[in-house]
Amino acid sequence: MTDIKNVSVIGAGVLGAQIAFVVAHAGFKVTGWDINDDAVEAAKGRFNSIGKSMIADLDTASEESVAKAHENLSLTTDMEAAVAEADIIIEAVPEKLDLKRSTWEKLGKAAPSHTIFCTNTSSLLGSEIADASGDPKRFINTHFANRVWARNLVEIMPNPKTDLKYRDVVEEFANEANLAPIIIDKEQRQYLLNSMMVPLLQAAQQLYVEGIASVDQIDKDWRIAMNADQGPFEIMDVIGLRSIVNVAQGSGAELPEWKLKFNEIATKMIEEGRSGIGDGEGFYKYDAEGNIQR
Image (cartoon, rainbow, N blue to C red):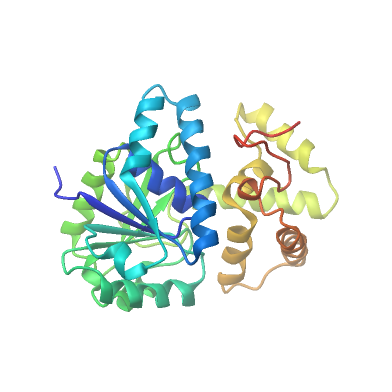
């Protein structure tokens, strides 16, 4: 059993809010941080929605347990206060290297000397960020799947400077938080999950922008053929188009024409307030519980 009691989640967007609420539901005291009062208010709405989804999806969640999770949660716009007593920090700010590094420069200075540092990123390497924290040996990459309460894996990936005793503590913490830890032995962009999933999403994007088939037909094809709950565009709505675009732009690779066209479409959707399930609309429209309005 770990000594972790206080958890700080930095960034209370779509995924950060899920991480915070699931960990609070497991009994930890969680402090969430976001950049301003509007973001904090939005996070409160996300917590309410997540709680309802947990009750609907999990036998282990009830009105009482969700109410307790809310009691275990607090929110602030003060970063130093957010991490003042943190045993572990899980950072979930947008997928931009400069932003990740500047955030960790602040967190590393504000956090106690025993705090374990975790960055939630799907495409950036810990070795690109860890030194900004001031203590790379305590720094570990973690990657959560969307709908954390139902798809409860967390990929744990040390960087070459990580002291592996911290990896082991994060693994045990994940078990205590009712998550399923997956240990990655060698640092790699996109971990395991996205190494397999990104080619699927990109194939769907190309089929769409080249006019081969519509969004709903591509998704229907995948759902039926693979007996899957979601098609690729439904998955992209859950991930959020901001993350899809940020990952592509931050990859450093020269993008093919179809991908540039898809990014243009996605960027326009984001500007129109249709970035995915977090906005209530992406490629599909969603009700308050996150169900597609078909």
